[in-house]
Structures are given as structure tokens and as C-alpha cells.
Image (cartoon, rainbow, N blue to C red; front, side, top):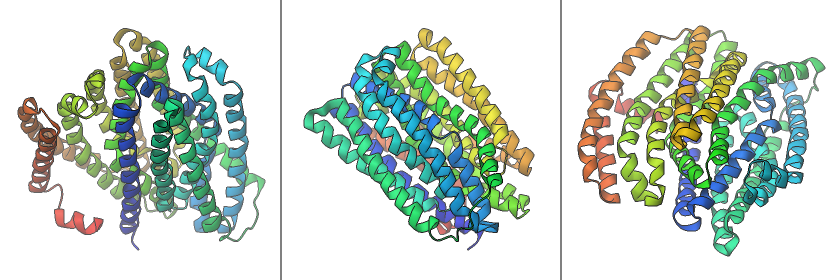
Length: 488
């Protein structure tokens, strides 16, 4: 099987799984926002999940990604070291999980008081247990990526998200309210963690000859986890601390506006995340085989495809944000409209980052992006503190867009320094994609004032997609027959 075929197979598996999980999460988001919880309860739930996410970074400290990197190398050249890497990394992970989760469970009331949200205490108690299993899910998915078996990561992800929907809805309908919703998250994580650990043991741990390990190998893995700790922690802070600060400075209702906008962008970013997750291990393999020109070609193609999808997607999101929020989630969430319009720009930056940053880890450049992530995350936190009290949730969105844009530019520069891709060719593609997006945007802009119901909204979106498809085909950027042949 060629490198391209392997990447496409991994992409299809990951995309399929993420579409299923994001569809499940979309249904859950819609049910919670419109039917099962009030906007205040919705904001409170995701405020607590953000707090748990921040706590979760201390359960990893880069161990998972470092293990994945060394597994990716060892399985090619010294496969007898793989069981040792699994044992050692999981052992460290379990110790960290025990410390952090115990602290959260024991101190849930004090933490709620510190956050000036006493109504979150019970949710934090359940969340401390949830963190145990969610951290194990994250570990197994990352390690499967190191084995270049992203299909298994997809399985764990599907189990987690699909079962979560059923249990969240069931517990909430039974009258447990927002605490029931948190318990649903817990049950989904428990089931997925069980599946992930069993797969890891049966498919990998017992199938490799166990040659034991050396202290030097363990030390190399731990040393490489240090820059990964910085970048992973900074990434989690970037994704979570803004939500925590919105809740701290404002209220759960403001959190609901902010979280809803971020969840919509996460749904839009599914293809980019799937492609980046699938292609990343290939860069490490190409470097190990001294084939950096092939790595550059892969990156150029990957970057062009995500820009081809996400520049017009951002334009469309800005134009239809108002009717989409009001018609889908209700007028109570109209405050999310300006936030979503700002976050549409973030979508472009995140799409580029999704296909760049993990690749840098596998190329051994984790320390470079760790520095960039640390600096921009700190800047993001400072900007949030300055802007949220004055501009509300829009200030948080603006801070995210600015700092993430800088981080994206640095990552692309580091990737260029490593594999010297053709930035001129990518730039020409971006210019053409911008023209296509403008043409599509004009048509959508003319029709948006006439959108009064969901059918009209769907029609306008479909028309925009159709115009985009025609323009990218006529421009020669995409050959439909070649693309379909790869994906089928």
C-alpha cells in the first residue's frame, strides 16, 4: 500500500468516526440547548467541563505524545521495545491521574468557591471521576496514532461520544438535570476507556516480543515529554481557559454563548482534524527514511486541501451566523452571533494548525512549537483578562483569534524550516481560493436577508456549496474524478 493510500484510508476512517461523533455531539448540543437545559444550566455544564479540561492537562504532561513518537520509531527498527514503552508510559499516566483526580474529588467544594460558582460543586465532584476515564481515552487514542492505527482511535472516539448522548439524555429526562448530564459524560467515558485499554492490550501489547527496556529509553521518552508538556498544556489552556474566564468574569449565560460558538466551529473543523490526525505519523516515517521531499509534497497537498475547504467555509459562517443561531437554537442564544462570526476566522487558523502541529511532533520539533504555544497561550490569557470585563464574550473571541493566528504562522514557519515546502505554490493557491470564496460569498450575501425558516437557510447553504464546487472545478484546483477515486 502506498503512502498516499495509507493516509487516505486513515483519513476516511478518522473522518467517518469524527462525523459520527460530531453528529452525536451536535444532536446532544441541540437537545441540551433547546429542550433539556436552560441557557444558564447549559453554560454551567460546559463551564465545569472546561475546568475539568484544565485539570486534565496535569494527568498527561506530554507522556502520551512522547510515547507515541517513540513507538512510531521503535515499531520500524526495534519492535521489542514497544511493550516497555507502553508499560512505562501508562504507569506514569496512572500515577498522574490518581493525584489530579483525587485532588479534584476531595477539594470540589473549595474549588467551586474559589471560582465564585458554588452551584458547580456537585458537578466538579462527578467531574473528578470523569477525568480518570477521559484521560485514559486520550492516552489510548494518542498511542494508537503512534502505531499509525488511527482507525482504532476512531473506534474509541465513537464509543465515547455516541454512548454519551444516550446516557446524558436519559439521566436528564429522568429529572437529574445538569448533574445528570455530567453523569452521562462519565458513563460514556467509562465505556470508551474499557474498549481502548482492551484494544491496546490485545492488538499491540501482547503481539510484540518483549525485549524489556533500558533506563536510557525511558529517560529519552521523559525528556521529550517536557516540550510536549508545554505545548499540550498551552493548547489545553487555549481551548479551556477562555471559557473558565468568561464564567469567572461574567456568568453561565455568557458561557453558553461562547461555548455554543466554539462547539459549532469544532463541528466545522472535523475534516481538518481528521486529516491532520491521519497524516501526522507519516512525516516521522518519511524523516526516518530520509525522504523529506516526499514529506514536503504531502504537506503542500494537505495544506491546499484544508484551505480550499476552510476559507470559503469561514466566509459562509460569517454570513449565515445570525439566521442560523436564531433558527436552530432559538432567540435566547442570539448573543452568540457576534462570537460565532469572530470565531469563523479562527476556523481557518485552526484548520491549518490541525494539519501542521502534530506533524512537527513526529518530526522532532516539539520544542519549537512548545515555545510558540506557551507565549501565545499566555498572551491569550492576558488578553482575555483585559477584554472580557470590557467587551464580554466578543472580547474572549477576539483574543482567541489574534493569538491563535500568531501561533499558526509560527507553526507553518517551523514546518517550512524542517521540510522546505513550496510556499510560493501554496500562496498562489490561497489567492485563487480567496477569489472563489468571494464569488460564493456575494451570492450568499444577496440571499441571506430572505432567510426566514430552516428550509430557506438550508437552501442558501446548499446554493453556496454548489457555487463553491463549480468554481473549484472550473478553476482546476480539484479534479472531481480523481478526488472521488481516492475517497471511494
